[in-house]
Image 1: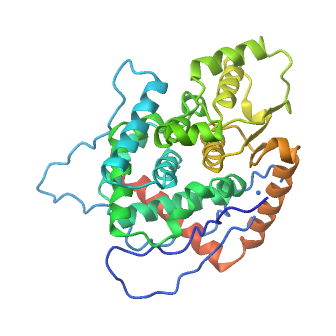
Image 2 (image 1 turned 60 degrees about the vertical axis):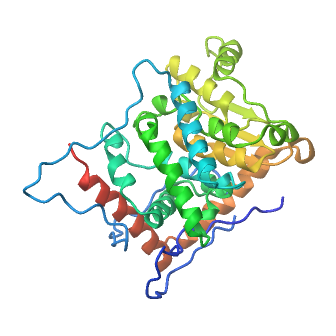
Image 3 (image 1 turned 90 degrees about the vertical axis):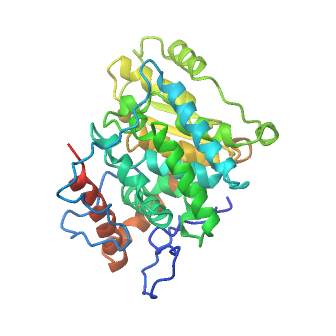
Length: 367
């Protein structure tokens, strides 16, 4: 299969204003094995991230303002909330004349949805994110992909079509469009919808599907044979297929050869959880011919907590046949590549930047 553009996660993005040149380590991911649960070594010391400081503290004489959380209105279901976020993000992209590169707004929303700090205080990070400059916002998105590359390099590799733009030199106009999309998504409740630490809550909706559907033209969808299956239909089909889930045992395999961003996979996972079965004990494989949809599925595999035994492939299942075998071979190669870099200075610096960023935000959360 022809490789898509590879993601340089750790290159320093160009700033809106020139800065003195600095030598920056560059790392390119080249290829996605058996499940690997290893994470970054605990002894790596965090390092500072230039230009990614939080907003200046409030002067002592001024009252401390309560951070805005932008909650989802009461009574709004998760699917409807996800649609509202997607429409707001797409509207911001088009109103700022972002152009035809839908991978940029999809990638912005995906990275913010994957932001690792979850829990009750997750929505309180909104003000901090909204206060970032366009350049620092792109840097935040880049470091978020770096964080997840350490943990699931195979899925970040598959998500490269919606992440590789972060290594480009973006124009001021493009930077403004990125910031507009992020602001629209956050103020529409993104951090509330995706801020839970419980994968069951995160799998209540398929935000990536709404993003792709909203941004892609009708003609493009028809050319790809791409149609959004309503989540209620997926849930009904999942219950009919699984019945009482009595046949599902650890290691049970689910495969969707034309899965889009994973709507049917999400519905099955939620039915399993209703029967007190952890989806992470099963095997999941999804394929789609569209690279953007497959990238969204890779994001969802992480977001929905489907575990280490997950693979996503982008290809024509009728021409390639056993796409799960191809995906497993690629996954093994990517994990070997990740492991070979763990001892290098480039990886140590990258992990340090990502961990320092996360530690800094956690320390600045307002109770």
